[in-house]
Image (cartoon, rainbow over all chains, first blue to last red; front, top):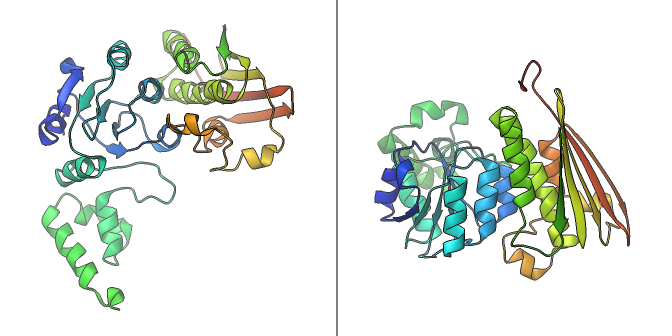
Length: 163
Length: 143
């Protein structure tokens, strides 16, 4: 999806980077620790965070991240916005909390792809694993929300989950 | 080409500026984005360690045709147990630093993860030196 879609889905305002709203966002993560950001994210990701400090902009610049969305209605200072402008990193603000922001974007098809230790590579993988299938079948489950939902329900009602 | 930046302990306003300068310099001389990103991350982590833990230090970057060398030397408390400090999740960062999103105990492990060579020395009561090498992809990353 494009950054413009992120803005619409999260009902977000753009504080800087209006000129980059048409850039494609391939993956996102939610993160409130700069060290985690530095350890596990990949270049060109969108970051959802409640951490409103100048350091998040600096870290994003070092990591080549594509944009920052401040969640839970947090407002960065003018200094933070001007740092982001100088670094060429779009900054958006949404009133949704981190969990809901992530959920809304995930539901709209934006996946994680973080290199978190032990992390699955995509939501489709997670659903596939939950339903007992191997992650290797992910392409079959990916891209089709209906199927993914079915297998998730199947997993929840499956015998392994029975008390 | 050599770039040297002074880093002041406790100065969270300026923290990250040295690493940002390093990254811009690397991009200017034509280092590919992925290698520049790795070098910027280790420089940033090293700089933040000086800001968080030491009283002052120098971040130096040497760029040669085949490698980028990042060195951080500080005057500070030093590290009593380096193998413990290298463990993910171990941190001695104070509470006010954690509130800023640091202190997850990933700084040194990150430096090691993103570099091709990593060396650390420390003397308690004097300071810490970290040296990291990032190899440049062969043939002509630099013009």
